[in-house]
Length: 122
Image (cartoon, rainbow, N blue to C red):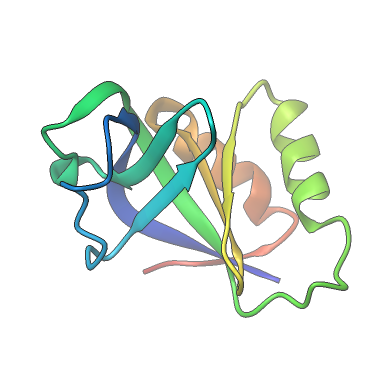
């Protein structure tokens, strides 16, 4: 398995609605429940109708398409990082998973994971 660094700064936000979210941005993750509307996007693309936000996140993805039958990948990553007091925020798409850490933990996280997985620099 390969881990690929993503070279952007990310923000995790609550938005009033999705009217100002550009779904064509390179990275744009939205979620909606009965309680909130959430957005994870590149920091420079945070919309003006954000009601709360947390900046200073960095991300990597698990490279390649992950079959739904694969078990334990995120568990192993989260356990390795938890053992080193690194919190994560995880997003999943149909094809793969994205893991965000706070920017000040990012290089340490990649160093830890590079001992277990192949790290792809981009």
